[in-house]
Image (tube, rainbow, N blue to C red; front, side, top):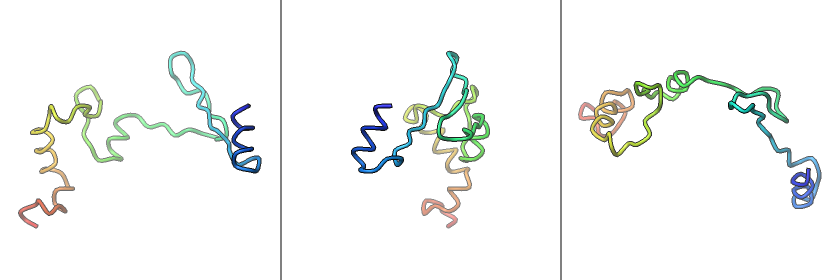
Length: 91
């Protein structure tokens, strides 16, 4: 690969630059990953749980916050994060 040869010359020693390529089929399904034995997969609901955010009705994260400012503010005030915030009137 030309990129590896170029980066080896740039870095000054071989074997440092090891690009990872994620191989997918025509439908976007993960087939494999180079220079890595596995690629973690999480469904959207698992990501939401890990990151502590709610999904919309279509199991998607919120994509346009300014349009839902009031909804976001209410969700924030009801979250566990608000309890540790200086904005919390109960301290």
